[in-house]
Length: 330
Image (tube, rainbow, N blue to C red; front, side):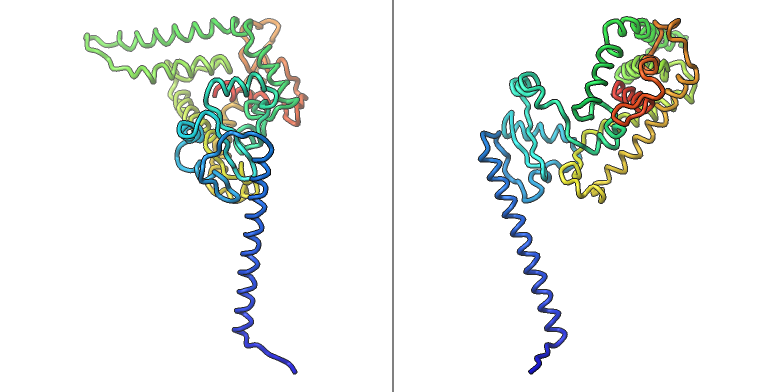
């Protein structure tokens, strides 16, 4: 005897089955998450964890908003103590905010904390981890640290560039004086000193890296380029400090839920265009390093250290130079 069910009944049964299956899957995932959380707690003493962690995402929802991650974590540390543990998707994070804890992490146990996790900032803003401030600990990081310590930021190198800094400071003061001297009357002139110091610092940094001057007695094209570049640097700093959901939940990267990944790509494209022009100009000039050794800027020095065929951890010479120039600026 055959039994036939109406189509509506069959559809209803399928819906019930689907709902039951989804509920069972959610329950199983929640159970596994709880088991994992309990197992982590049983492994040893951990820093206290703020309340409010959600299944799967942990404390990610606490890091949302317009504030940078540093400010959000600072507020959590003020409320819960100098050392706290955060559940960030599949990762655990330790937040320390006292000098005693920082010394314990970065002096006593520096090797343990030497590396950096993979991040959207390192991938998209850092030339795929060529920017060694965002690169994981390894051969490339050690090599770039050695170059920076012994060549770019050594006492002898900074002494050779002392004249650049001195000249730029003198030039800025002369321009400030000439601004007042041009007035025939004795009326005062308003000068935004915070902007003046910002321009001075920017000029010194860029002169040291690429021997270019962007603010002061320069043409309008250079000053416009400088303002655009400075704006892009500020955007870079903001994007490097925001929380990216896919850093904690990598399988969501393709969705770009916050829109930050596309912003990072546009930002680094804008910065790369300008920094690449500096490198190309230095290569084109092809200075004689042996005769102008005291006049080398950072890009000159990098070109003298790295050959054209240099390949460090799959990073080519020009990429390494651009990434290093960028980290010196920020």
